Image 1 (cartoon, rainbow over the protein chains, first blue to last red):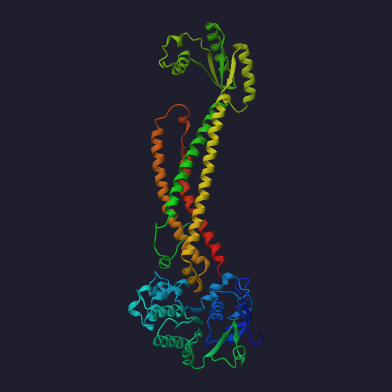
Image 2 (image 1 turned 180 degrees about the vertical axis):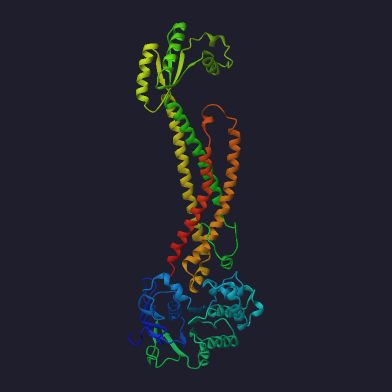
Length: 243
Length: 301
């Protein structure tokens, strides 16, 4: 890739260049993936089931290294990055999983506070932001509830709150509306849009075409059989940064 | 630090199910057996050393001259001559009554008034203890002395007949030491299995912690603390039971004042070792858990 200068201020936040991914000796499930994600932009990742969306997101949130190609995040080469440096990068990324992945024996408050505690924020300093976040997602009165006692939508909101509490620069969401009703889906999307307005780059993997049409200026990435469809080249060579 | 400090809020990341698994109980059993084996090893080693020291420089001269008067004179002369030698620490004639009392146990008359026993032609015995370590030259000098004062007498080094017993006791002490090491290895294996099982059970939590930026060190400290505390409970329980058993044995042993049994005791160094073993076990458990966890976490991106 030649259009991005990693260390350049205002450059791409995420750069994939000729990325391929295979698990074991099998054929590649992702091939020749090349794109740039600009700071402050909103992206939808679509594609049929099995197209490789989750695998692509895993590389985005550093749960998987590519088998080949170049991945740069925040200007740094992640393929060759030593393992002990990854936690620092992960703290700059928020992840919303389709299955929520809340820790079952922790309350909603403790689940949301987790990233701040891991980052070493004192209990005194985190109580305010966590309380605000609980109010923001409408669960101020359910702060002590365990995930098992929350509805699917409530769990999803807790998962989103956990993903954004540390103000990540990049938010990655895998089918975040897959387990909620349409009304809740729109509310969750509103949360993402609000975060995006605050400067967070958002990548949402979804099947829901109605969702995509609700975000103005959102760009769409489509995976087809492990390859990224980018007929206009806008993803690889974006016309301009929104931020 | 053996049990790492973890903030209270972080501790809640692992559900509180203390003593619910088999680990503390298995560790308790292993710790109890380790302490009993260590105590046996220390006692046997001290016994073997005591016997070895006692027999290494001692000989008995057996005078079998037929005439009892000549025999008694030779024994007295030999005792006097030996006691005057610089290489002899002490020389003592074994009294006839002492010999009769010893033999009486075999004849069934411990008080020594058996007429058959009294009529036996018993040899005269002189016990000689050497000084220093150069026992070869001392033996040569004693032979010359015996040839002069009691011709025909036999010199019997105690090491010849008690040596195999001392070697057997020493071997048992080594076996006990090997058992301690084996049980330490078994304890470490239990901790490794516990750590791996904990990782398996809490894999989803670990994966989530990784995804939100937790370092291996943070995750390891969390699990290391839990495993160290669980094993510490087991070690405390096993040590308490072992201490009770050892005190009971010690109480019974205190009544034994004769023979080889009287030489077996733990001594201050032995007790210090037994007190140190539980602490070493906790340190071993924590270190093993830490290394196992770090190695396992490195396999996860």
